[in-house]
Image (cartoon, rainbow, N blue to C red; front, side, top):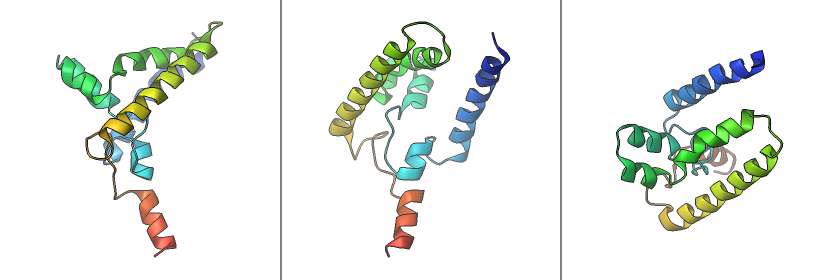
Length: 127
């Protein structure tokens, strides 16, 4: 394995942990925009999965088991990598649209965070 891969393996969990600790929502996208991202609920799904609460894990994010596979694909070097990444991205976006239409804006994690940086900046620009 190249040294750069080791660096990614070390820095990725540190970045995720930092985002979780230093943001209110645990998601930098939701922290800035107030809207959930396509992977919103993934961390809580894994926490539920670790506690053997499988139903709750699937409620938080139905594709949480594909998260590690997606990350592996990003760092792997095989011929059909781009095809699989494209298919996974389409699947995540499709599930995001379904979740947004079914749960938005009332049920976590698909709710709106009104006290976010984008709304605060827009409030200063357009009082």
